[in-house]
Image (cartoon, rainbow, N blue to C red; front, side, top):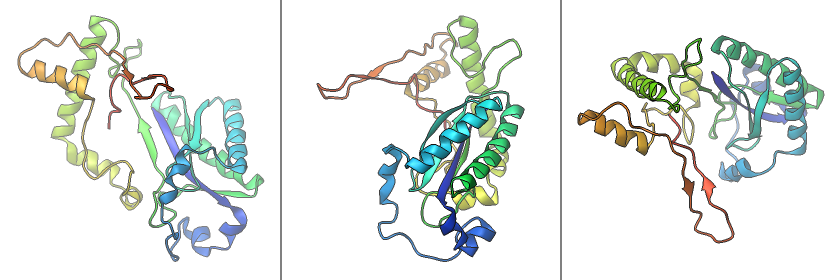
Length: 248
């Protein structure tokens, strides 16, 4: 399991002036910003200096605790950010997430900042998610959701995707109940996940292969081959693409 923890960071002095934030973790009164969420380009900008210092401090502490935080960057909403570790065993990963949130809040206080971990601290703009990127494997190292390079691994991959798709189709109500917590449903909207409609999209390449299987084709034959995207500009090099779209 590999989690992605999103959070907002604001000045502690401003946080203390808002009793609703202090007591509820979210705003109860107020109005939308004049430009609403048009500052989404914040995602591609460098983090503010203070927030950058905070995230690097947290990264160093977490590494000392045995958790390598591989990703840190801005998120879509203004003042929203994200940090993610390298994946590990699910039970360890869940414990690491709780540890991370504690370290984040403590380090923010030292810098005169406040980290907000509520799912929807501000009405009208994106909330914060805790996305889970998961897979299933064996104690011998076989990954069910990695195409692999051998016939055995590819057969396992195709079979696992088929089982997952069938399970989602047969038990979608159970999955929906698992994710439809009060906080998650309150957070939904805009570009956020999970969406109201659940789907399994492994990408066009694999879907074409599945169509052939349905027609009577063999389980073997799918190859995960990386491609490049042409930027249509002579001053930019072709970008290496992922094998398939992200599974959502």
